Image: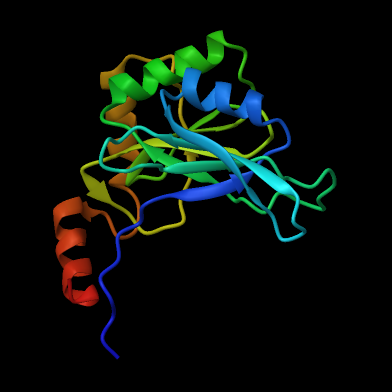
Length: 183
């Protein structure tokens, strides 16, 4: 079977407090509301929807649906990952979140990425990250100190990554994936 060409576009998830969630994603992460409205849910009751994007080529990258059940045994979203452009921006987001009182923040490295993990207002785990120039075997996670200067963070990340299994340039890893995926 020939594998169809696909590109990830967007995700939707349910929220208890649609207004609070919209405010967080627009104010803290710079998403823009592209549309809003409602559609009947499976039970016929209207479900309010808010469409959010940061990309003018994507009508929406996130859809917030106001139909999250009051009680769930666990949050079914493992994480929502958002890539940013560079470490300066990632550290700015960290400081903005810290100054806004976002708690439960965890700056870490996966070797192939530098990430900030935290929770949105309804407890969904967010990962905001940048890629590094190298690859290491996964999974791997080490805490980082985002209060250090950028150069020190980058040096710490690379020094540790060089000690790990599978260390190689990201370009080499990517070429391997292109071959394996037949892309």
